[in-house]
Structures are given as structure tokens and as C-alpha cells.
Length: 254
Ligand SMILES: NC(=O)c1ccc[n+]([C@@H]2O[C@H](COP(=O)([O-])OP(=O)(O)OC[C@H]3O[C@@H](n4cnc5c(N)ncnc54)[C@H](O)[C@@H]3O)[C@@H](O)[C@H]2O)c1
Image 1 (spheres, protein in one colour):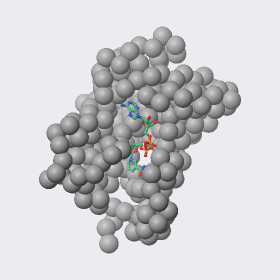
Image 2: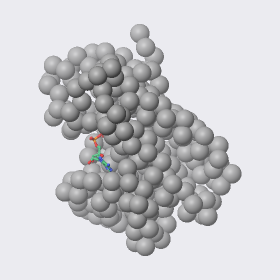
Image 3: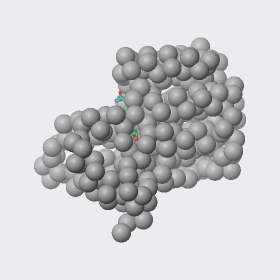
């Protein structure tokens, strides 16, 4: 992929799939903004990107707050003058989730919807008018198999709702902005072995989960990043409104 001369914002770029994406886009030639709340790790990613000879910037942004995403877009335009790619990767569940829906609280619901759905709304809203003016842009969102098939954990109805929302948002926005030369797509990863996932789950749990996946293993963050890179490139110019499965066959069911 050739992304030289492109400026990308990667939300959640400090860790996991976002980190792999930020590095991959830089390897393909893009200048990259790592937008995250984890500034220590974001700084490490920025150092790695600069070592590749690309410009990079870490921005402390909580994607659930629209004033912060607006500031993020302004800061990127001040620093780089353009925004070509927005990879909306920040998302996930609450760290201390313990309850199924019938025992869950409104606070957890709000947290999950804000983090996974409103965050995508906020970051996209912050860049979209700029992309419309330039008649060019690539927006890549991250769904989940929970959003297409329901969660297998029996505890994540809120997350499934948010991710289904991301997929619907992707398709509808794609129709709205196609006339401006903007591509909007979604990637649905299967279970992906990020550092955070591996550190929070015992080896037996990881192995059991992997055995339920048709390809017999969890995905790697780099495999999701690879699809983000493709969708960010001109090679994917005729793809919009798609939800692309990178899930090891999980969506096939059994
Ligand atoms: N890992 C998986 O198995 C998997 C599967 C399907 C979908 N996904 C999705 O992929 C995306 C990335 O997941 P991951 O596993 O790499 O997560 P991760 O926990 O490894 O990384 C998430 C990043 O988001 C940042 N973040 C947290 N709150 C934030 C906020 N309010 N604003 C900005 N940044 C914030 C964190 O600091 C972290 O850097 C998420 O949207 C997740 O729902 C992950």
C-alpha cells in the first residue's frame, strides 16, 4: 500500500489493534496521529513512527467527549494541514465487567455505548467537514462479531448493541458522503490476541477460545491493521459501506 503524503488519525492508537494500525500506516508512508488517553504508551508509538522516518504526534483525547475530539481535529490541522484517514479503533468493554444484562446497570450501559459508539460519532464528526471540503477521505471503523452475531460471552449485550450501531452508522454515512469522494468502511475482527487481552486472561482461557475459532487460533493485531491499511489506500477506492470480516471464520457459525 502506498500512503505517502497521507495524514492519519488512529484513535486508541497506543495499544492493541490501534497500536498495530498506527505502526502499519506509518510503514506504508503515512504521517500518524496517535489519539488516546494512555499518553505513556502513545509516546512509545510516536517514537517508533518517527524512527520509521514519518511525522507523528500523540494527542491526549477521550473520544467520548466531543469537545476533545474537536480539539484533536484542530490540533492535527494546525500541525499537518490535512486529515486523509480516520481509523476509529478506540473501543472495548469495561475492565471490571461482572454481570449479565439482567443484573447490569445503566452506568455500564452508558459507558459501553459512549466508548464504542459515541466515540466513533465524535471523532468522525470532528473530521468530516474537512474531508467534505477536500472531497476526499477514508474512515475506517471497528465493529465486532458481537455486533453481527451477538456476543458469545453472555455478558455483553451493551457491547453488541454498540457495535451493531457502528456497522449501521458506517453504512448510512457511507451513502451520505460517497458524493464527496469519502469512503466509510467497517472491519469486524474476531477474537484478537492483543497484549491487554493476553495479560487479562489465563492461558487456558485463550487456548479454549482459540479452539472455537475455525482457523484454530486468535487473530493478531497486525492482521486487523493490514485491513485498515488496505481500506485506507487507493487500492480500495471502490469499497464503501462494507463491513469486512477479519475473524478466522467465526461468523460462519458451526
Ligand atoms: N481484541 C479483540 O478481541 C477485539 C475483537 C473485536 C473487536 N475489537 C475492537 O477493536 C478495537 C481495539 O480493541 P483492542 O483489543 O486493541 O483494545 P485495547 O484495550 O488493547 O486498546 C484500546 C485503546 O483505546 C484506548 N482508550 C481507552 N479509552 C479511551 C478513550 N475514552 N478515548 C480514547 N482512547 C481510549 C486505550 O488506552 C487503548 O490504547 C475496539 O474497538 C474493540 O472493541 C477487539
